[in-house]
Length: 447
Ligand code: GAP
Image (cartoon, rainbow, N blue to C red; front, side, top):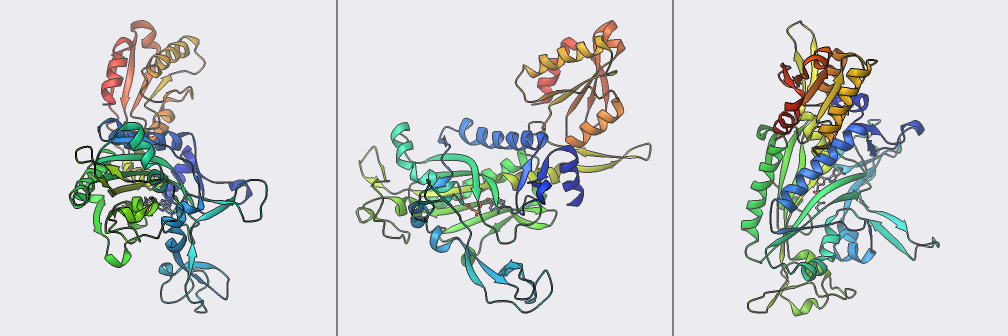
């Protein structure tokens, strides 16, 4: 993990938040390359969910959430971790992070009994901070999908089965954030809530587990690095009838990358008004505040159904960590030296190609390079970099380390015959092709 963390900082993928003031635990910032990688990952998810299918709509809802949303969702009562205090060094721990009843910080056995600690952040709304008007920072993006269920159905005329996808920030006051961006207090989720007829839920659940494993494969996560975990009944969230976790072999151990839950009719049943008018199978809190009926009408027999929900929920940050870990390689070269290479799938690479003039202060080379960069940039395939460092060897190493699939070098031969050198990141092979051929070559290499 240290090597990866060091690469992330050195090359501008991920920095610790507010490091100049000592940092803040469990918070990270994405640098110039990190934001490109993260955006590319989110775009790949969005395309696979919303563009490539015809049964899913998108949503972007607010982060600040009405307290009633988290009351009826069950989060106020149950979204807790058992917290243990060390009476000697005053550190705080999640009970399941303590081995042999001894404090991980000072080793003392002088610990308090575990007590529940709610993980939600609260904030005041409006100018008066007397606790009367507060909101939660959402702990999952899912809830605002449920509260928008009727809006989306009414505006799109969807019938079951269909889904609503959302990517966005979620906040959890984790007791022990750890392992770089694996467990943090502010993170992003890519969540799909897929609404189905009761009775068809188990079949859809299986389908989504298969879909999601395939998708991670397309992002470069080897199937041998994944394990499928059937979550034991005692560990299920309060809303879940069955959850399958896609576990990834992170550098610190096998842990959850994505969870796929069968949330039954719990969520829509919890947030609807007039609950007694429906047959709701899940155990829901009596809702005395909702003003909206959340059921969906069957267009054939006009009956109203509270749908079941299948939820594939993936962490963007955990995805970035898994993808970086899969792609990171240290290779021995023929001359005995080593190179670090990030063998990212090209659709995820932060930089799609680097255009490099052999000499930084040669106007003709620089102007050719700038013109080619601009041509490639206009193809809309992602960021193309004009790299004017003036040291071709160093540029190649840098682009290997940040996962740029292709380097294009403009040299003095280019001025004579309009040919350039193209170097492949993975094979390090170099070949000459003409500037005219480059756009096609570039586009094909990104497929
Ligand atoms: N809506 C369901 C839900 O939120 P979850 O298993 O608590 O379920 C879903 O979270 C995903 O969000 C996890 O699989 C993980 O990838 C990510 N995630 C959860 N807590 C996280 C944290 N503290 N830091 C980073 N990612 C987290």
